[in-house]
Length: 369
Image (cartoon, rainbow, N blue to C red; front, side, top):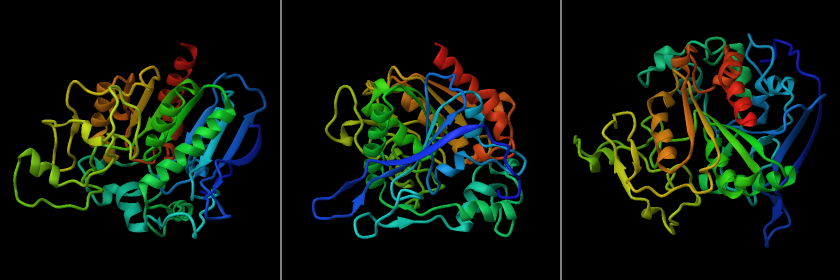
């Protein structure tokens, strides 16, 4: 990542923190997010971008490209005239973790990184893993690009509820500070924070772009589950037992607004769908589904990479959104001729092809409409 100089785009840069608070029993602040604010020499777009990274990552990953890409996505959008806000989530990177007040942390190890993200073709843990070709280098420890990338990975809050609440609260303060509609761009775990922010401030979110968004609904996939079957069975009960519960509100760890309103996740009646597999359990809201009422007027784009583990189940996430009344377009990259990407698509060798052909034009259309 350090070997290729970046041309970059002429811009102004400043940074600040927002969302910090002191608990009643402490004089140490917590909950803040670092915000990197980038402004091109000439702003031509009316909606800023608000970029939210995924698990283990920081805002710096929106700034960097691969060995074969001279600029990252942030620079690409700056060149198109977008003002940009990039955050580090609470207790991550430049958003300081305070050991006396914040919860425990977890770090992704190198082997897990290789298996799931950078060299999945070597492990073949899901059907499309063997199709991964776009990571720069070998994707394993000892390779220069992998070593630089892994060195940038940060510990993350272990408790998804704590992380969700703190990211939502600080993110809402940033939206209020920006005070005009933004385009939320999220990756992986960051997608649920995008939905929570749009739910809290629907008038300040113009649209959402989700790259391999967090999912599937209600349960982890086999790639992240810690359970094994009690007995060999194809019943819905035994299918569900194989997978670790997650995201009790469907796609989020903490409450989000539904209509009719709910007071408990148990009020979201669940239905196991016929296309569940050994790799994932496909669970939807039973009809009539509760609507994500604050998201129904916010268009969304879901981008799924061909070789990512998300290729197995992003359709479940998309269907959940649609049942909940959310207007969403789903682009599977291989279906538009963009092949070989993994979960980290926006820093892979063909990252600019993805933003130039799919993400950028979609955002331009949404702003124009």
